[in-house]
Image 1 (tube, helix red, strand yellow):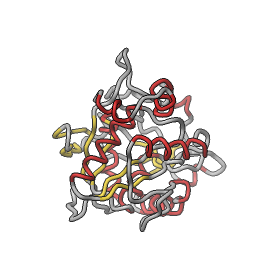
Image 2 (cartoon, one colour):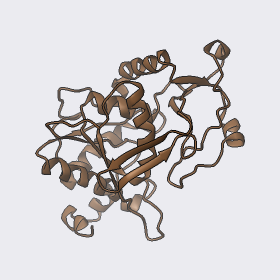
Image 3 (cartoon, one colour):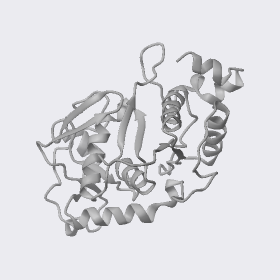
Image 4 (cartoon, one colour):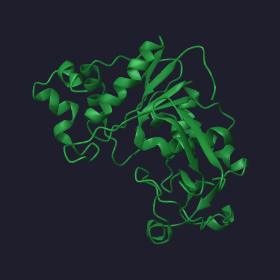
Length: 278
């Protein structure tokens, strides 16, 4: 891990729905850690999902975060030296990273359909990992074999290698490539950069020194560490927070409208009272 003289944290919501209490608690931790370190906090709008991202959710996101008490020094509404802060405006950076990975032999084209993946992929090893382990069907595929066919790009993981990192909240973490996670998508078949690649490119470019996010992304950190290494980038430190769940023990999602910040605000709840429940 690299060490920095100045702390830089970030909030990285996606405008695919209204933010909920789970987002707020994790983001509040990110803000608290940035303030405690005397550092900066960056707001990044992760709006790459063309089908689900909507302009009204972007404006609601900023309004709800401000209402709850968040303050950031850089972002879509504040500007800053590492913009643009909307991922939809950063495609050239992602394409350059993809080319770098291709030149290095780290990725390969994959023509498997969703149906193929459902039939052939092994089940996820971890219950919080929502990407099944890819069986390597297209590992030997060449670009010439993808002519006139839709394909995505996958990162070839070093099977059997143990990826370790020290999480600032949960302690030592250990994942085995090919067992706990498999070859993962870095560029989707609909010509959109995948989360893993976009996240690494942006965190590196924005000089983020610590990534604070939910514990459901622990295995994503293992994947991303491989991307940092492949592209010759220094990795930030990581701090994964426990997830907020509903009364049945299911973790919150944007489908939990009753626990969205917008709904709670409309019902007269105050941010201070909501934070006291933590």
